[in-house]
Length: 164
Image 1: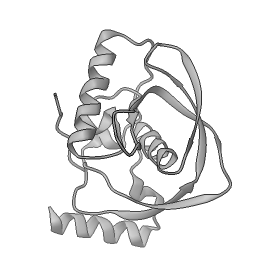
Image 2 (image 1 turned 120 degrees about the vertical axis):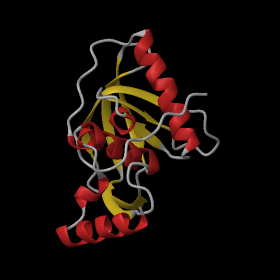
Image 3 (image 1 turned 180 degrees about the horizontal axis):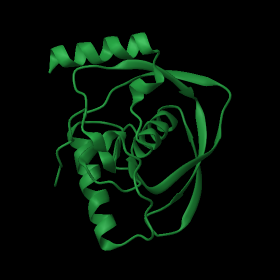
Image 4 (image 1 turned 180 degrees about the vertical axis):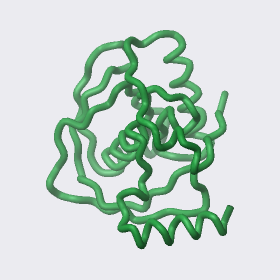
């Protein structure tokens, strides 16, 4: 098991868009394995490669109850989002000690390059959908708290500085 260290906020890599993956190689598979180990060690329901300082469009999501069902995604793109919203408390290992309730679409359809190197379209609902959207934000250089009002975001970041 190789759990990697999550880079601390405000590392500039957390604000930078990740680079698209051209093909699934042994190196990519190894990064995904480390990402799953890191996600399990937190424990969390998802992880994007920039969170561990790898600037590639790679994400893993596992919102299953029994675990061990991680979906590996390269270049995930949200094609459709439901109109119905869902609120969920979100946090990040890059900014420990704080969290916020974020409202996101309840379901999404995502296209991504899967572990077999094939394009796949999949529907995600509930916590799976929340986690996928959270990871796509990371791949675009955004954090969950960017979805808060300026006042709430400033309060959260002040609280994080005090906790850190």
